[in-house]
Picture 1 (cartoon, one colour):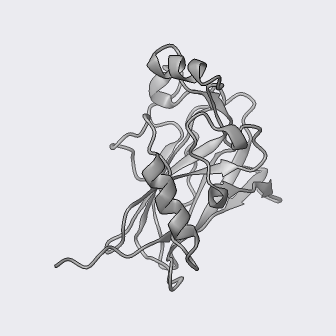
Picture 2 (cartoon, rainbow, N blue to C red):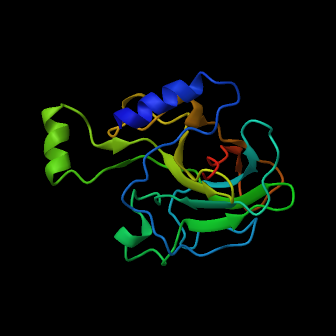
Amino acid sequence: SLVDEITYTLAAEAHDAPTATAILGPFFRADTPVRRNGESIVRTPAPGGAMAYMHGRVVDHATQRPLVAATVEVWQASTNGLYEQQDPAQEEFNLRGKFRTDAAGRYAFYCLRPTPYPVPDDGPAGKLLELMDRHPFRPAHIHIIATCEGYKPLTTQIFDRKDPYLTNDSVFAVKDSLIVDFVERKGDPQAGLELQYDVKLAPAPASS
């Protein structure tokens, strides 16, 4: 949204800014289960999918202090471009999970390298895209909601740098600071790719 973009632009000018926000999207589920750190969110095999180990810390954006017992909730579409509630072939809560950070503020899980997919274009949104002469594709991304007591909740998405739709996302959600690099992971039979990503939260305003 325009408000989101203005807020992001102002925050990006600050040193050690909090992680930028991005839209929630229509496929969030409030009842996603908590999983153990290091567990996989892939519950249904994905043809052609590349497994990745994603890990990082949740920190105070200004001090870099690790935040203990923060919650990192993630969800993503499968390789067919569908989220689990759209696809009866996927196990419930496939490619979803909530993780709690440890004493060092760390979280970790296995996921898929995300793939691009088209937004539903058979309704008003599709007509609008057609009028704007725009394609319906969203670049490959993973959704994140991060929360911690005493901090502002964060809703965001991270985007694969190698995706061809980065510069023309159908919903204009991509920001430079949310673009990430998947790298080769060696010695792990579960995943050939790795992504390290630290989430930076801002303290909540003091209550009056």
